[in-house]
Structures are given as C-alpha cells and as structure tokens.
View 1: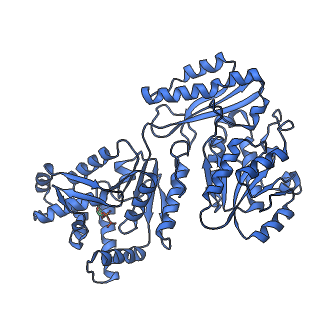
View 2 (view 1 turned 120 degrees about the vertical axis):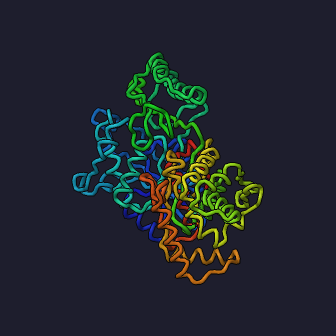
View 3 (view 1 turned 45 degrees about the vertical axis):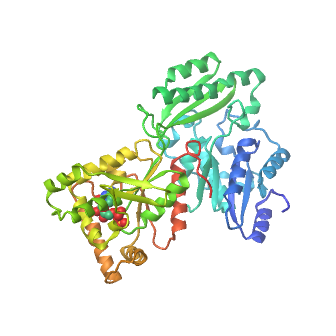
Length: 516
Ligand code: CDP
C-alpha cells in the first residue's frame, strides 16, 4: 500500500472512506524514536483477523506546554518521522496544523479539567495544566480519527492513567492499549527531548536509569527501596530532582509500604532538559481473582486465561465440591460441624495436572474430577461451603497455592477473602436464564440428566441466594472488582475482554502478555 501523509482532515477522511477499516491510533508529537516505533510495531502485531489500519498522528499540542516550556523549540522533522513510522509499519501519518485540530481556535472547544487528585501529582506538580492540555487534545484527536483502539506508551504513565480514567468516565468505547518504555543499550529511556542534551549532560543523565535500575535490583533482595541513596546518586551527577517517589500506580498516592504493584517514579532536570523515568516494583507475580455466581462460565474462561498467561489455574469450586463429595460418601449431615471437622482434618486434597486444561482433583487419593459434577454434589455444595471449618481450611490451602502469584483463581470469595490484594479482580456474571442455558449444555455434555431449563434456572437462583447470604465470605462483588456481564458474549469474546482488563492493570513492563 502506498504510504500516506495527510495534512488536512478532509484528505484524511477522503482516504479513510475508501478503506472501510477499523483504526488503531497512535498520537505523537513527532520527533519519533525507537520507543514510538515499538508502539507502531505492537499495533501492527495486534491486528489478528480483521483488516485494521495503523494511523500515527504528529501534532505538537500547544495546550500541554507551560509558558516557560519548550513549545517553540520542540524538535520537528516530518520527513525523518515519516520514514521511521513507515519502516515500523504505519499505514498513514496524519500531521494536521493547529486549526485542523482546533477549528476556530481552542476556545471554541470544550476543555478538560483533569481531577486534582490525578493532576497535582508527579509531573503535574510542576507542569501546571499540562494534563488538562493532554486530555483536551486527545479528545479532539479521537473525535477526528474515530479509532477503535488508542495506543499510548507506559513511559508517560501518569498521562496513560489519566486518559484511561477520562475514557472510562465519559464511557468512550475505545480500547486503550499500552506498551513498555523502550531503552537504548545503556538502559536510557528513549525520549524526543533527549536530543536537547549536550554530550556531557548525557553522561550525567545516565545516572537516572542506572540509579533506578540498581534500586529495583536491590528491592528484590532487601524488600525495600532506599530513596535517599537514589537521591544522592542523582545529585552527585548534577541532576536536580523534581520528584522521586514511590506511589500507587493508579491512584498516584504516595506509598509508605511497598505491597502490591508500586511505581518508583522520578523527574529530574539535567541542565535545562527535563527527564522522567520509572520502574514498577512487585514482589510476586500477578494474581487474578475471578468471582461470580453459578454457571457464569468462569471455569472455561479462567482456564483459557491461565493458559494464555502461563499461570496456575485454581478452581476453588472444585475444592468445595470435592469436600462435599467426601461428606456424601461418608453420609455426614452437612450441619454437623464436628463430624465434618473429624473427616477433613486428616484428608488430603490435591490437584494434579498433565496440562492446564487437563487438571484433575483428588481427595484422599481418589480421582473425583468427574464425580464432583453430579447433580447430587451440586445440590449440597452450598450447604457444606458455608461451614466455618471448611472455609478456613480451604481458604488457607488456596492461599498457599497462590503465595508466589502467577495464578488465576476462580470462585465466590477470591477477591474478597482469599486474595483481597489480588492485582486484577473480575466479577463475571450473566442473567440467570443465560446461565441456566449454559449449565444445560454442560450437563448434556457430561451425560447428566436434568428436568428442564426452568428447573435449572430455579436451582441456580437458590444456590446464588445461599452463597450470597451465608455468614462467612459470601458471594459478592469486591469493591475494586470490574464487573463483566457476559450475556451474548462467546468464550473468545470474554477471554479477549479479560486479557484487556489484565493488561490495563498490569503494565507490559511487569508482565508481557502474548497477543495471540
Ligand atoms: O456450579 P459452578 O461451576 O458455577 O460452581 P463452582 O465454582 O463449581 O462452585 C460450587 C459451589 O462451591 C458454589 O455454589 C459455592 O457454594 C461453593 N464455593 C464457595 O463457597 N467458594 C468458592 N470460592 C468457590 C465455590
């Protein structure tokens, strides 16, 4: 395809109207470097089946520069940019002028006020109004381009989370994908502003990524970050610190203790050039909690997600079902706590897996994988699952399995009780009718008889009620879980959505997710 560079909206739209393709959009201010090229390459790789076009914009947005900042001297070289963008796989470049983006001038358009809690942190502390300018222009750009996906770099992390929040609050149905900071062989993050550095400044500036990298390496040994040490290294190299902090990556609030995903972020002045860099800190691999009512399709998608990420798959429902099976075999009254305790205290319960999909569950060395799906077990499981001793025992075993992370667990109380600090929490649900239909298909496949779909719907509602009303760890959406209603979605749709949510919570720098 011929490489296209458009300067006006009219030219761009003319061309787009002939293409009939969804658009992946990468906004830039030009002065492209390998970091931008990486985003373009990733965009190209993400195109799976349908035809999509990768459009890169080059627009130096005056609204995001403070009055003493470098707007007038910001590097410009459209020919070089075009070459880099097309080499990386861009289908078109859109390089509009100010009035194409802001017809009638910026005051003829809505302006975004980024909430103070996000605006006044990190870069916003010194760059007043910067993020208002970024958010305002992004809305203009997407209005003109109308992309399906927007791609942003993780290097400007604060910008990324502000734009995510903006899209979420305005319910803008555009997916935002983000990719990790690219660095030269010395570890120095690519940035358009690096070209401002003189040779001697460049030598000093190297201490920024070096100190952050060293701190990150020390963190994995000592479990702490010595901010004072980083600060003194930066000062020794004549870098003036604007901020150097450990924050929660989503609220941007400063953190005292490093638990869960944290962001070590810094901005410095090297001469008159402002540089930013960061590292994510995480003690263990990610944990994903998927909760939801009966028959929401959790097992299938949880398994598929675990396989895609190379994580352990933990079906906690199977554990409650296995215990229930044991109680039925021993004719134990579900309300007899002491008998349940007696039988369980010396029991073994283990998963053995030859592959992610073929996981088998054993109780007291009996393979009960199929047996636990019987209608008899299903009808009794909620009664057993509400017993205190059963819950304590199984919760503790689940926590041991997940202690190093790298796990996708499904159940009713994963995000609330078992792993309240899970990095990704999803509440997967569907209408009772849809769930009854899915359950009927599943029972048919397993060769079990059932009265009617209406009967199954009734049974599902009763089980949901019991699970939601029990005293200990009831079924409920965690306050920080994302609800996904899966009516009308097929398995692949749900899986894609889960991967999207995972990527929005876990930066690529922490855990790269395969595209396919
Ligand atoms: O029937 P479905 O596959 O949706 O459920 P399951 O995941 O096999 O779980 C069966 C039952 O175990 C639930 O109805 C709950 O009573 C109980 N359970 C629980 O109490 N806590 C969990 N974390 C998982 C399951």
